[in-house]
Image (cartoon, rainbow, N blue to C red):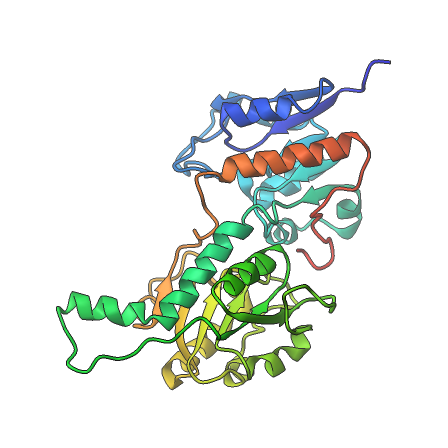
Length: 351
């Protein structure tokens, strides 16, 4: 019996080696890939590609012609909500889209697709692929805060050798609270425990987790913070997490808490964070994400002496495209076999 052809279209920039990896999943898979229609990558895993890239009218027509043939898409068209909305309306064959990011829910929500459409169209994220680089970045933030790296850099710039030397804090024996004990949170917990920290955290479904001292939902976050020396946020941006870190939550922290955000910027009330930095509740903040991106030039976070600003790059690594392609290939095998796809974007909560 001849297998039914499954057409996969590559909607975003991808190295030829990874395209061949997808082709090799099954003989029934036809991969449509025309690199001349895709913007060149400026750096590894630049899924949006060069913003200066423009297709001719003929190329634009060809791009959408390819995408409209597919049952499966690798990436959102043009990597934006408008592209997702357009393909959902124009391609009745489309069954599944695999997104490049872990936080694909924001794009899905912004596309304006209704619940009925989203119940028919499966959208999977690359959640978990970025867990290790994000967890390593979170560890960097914790260590920076405990070891006073911002102050050291300021002293070095001023060529200042303080007469009175200040001690640093031991990470070993300290306590970490992680908001969002998913794959990123659990990988962060693993690294934190290797540094000698104890870990508690929040999870939407409260359940015991190996190596985690206490698990609660976000309603119980304030109670956890009283015993924390550091806090790492990994939560996505949803209506339920917006400004979770508000004045009351920062006030519940121990004075001198180190705060790291590798989730989404909308989870933090930035005015409240600045107040907490200025009154000492937060001794240091390592921030990879912000409520508005790029971070506006007028934001006081840029110049705060105890803030590290990272331009939403902590998940990037040279291996990212390979890791996402491997995840997609595994999912494609599941899709072809009629199994349940992992990491589906929730059409209600958008994560």
